[in-house]
Length: 230
Image 1 (cartoon, helix red, strand yellow):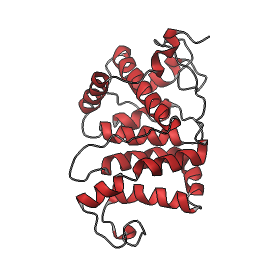
Image 2 (cartoon, rainbow, N blue to C red; image 1 turned 45 degrees about the vertical axis):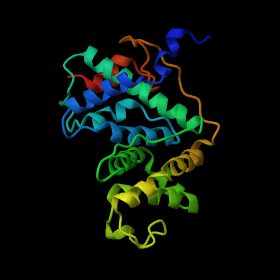
Image 3 (cartoon, rainbow, N blue to C red; image 1 turned 135 degrees about the vertical axis):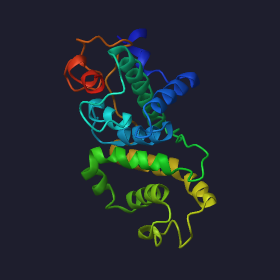
């Protein structure tokens, strides 16, 4: 039976909690992902055909280049961040499963670029699967949009049908972003179908000796928490 406690990490983030997550990311410095990039990254993680353990990517999100690096001084700091991260991941998954997905994109000059770069980093974890997806026309179309938003006026993309030879201006970016939810749903449905896929139920507070919520089968203290704390 599912309890109120076990439901806690499946709840969507409130606006103030999203801002708290943004503040934590900003505190990590320039090498860490922004909230927009994280949104794209976690969207891709949810699209992957197999569940990716957070221990594989927490360091990437935080901008940690070496094993010895960590922005967290203690386990409590890491736990606050990790729980916000898991709830954000769950919120995005719910939107994908319910077919109401909308990307979080900030109104900046190169609008959509950070989101697309985050998504492209996320698909690295299922590179072979995404390459196989591009063997069909829908997959190529969805992928082309991501690369154009990420890399703009790169010569490699100027002949793509979605551009028709046009320069990637701010207005063109806004136009392309309108098709982003559809492209993301094409990718998600390619691997999961629109009926979604089940995920492990997670508890509110994670004890050090509890199974890690990433699904690795290891204890929390020997998995994700070990990857994020000095």
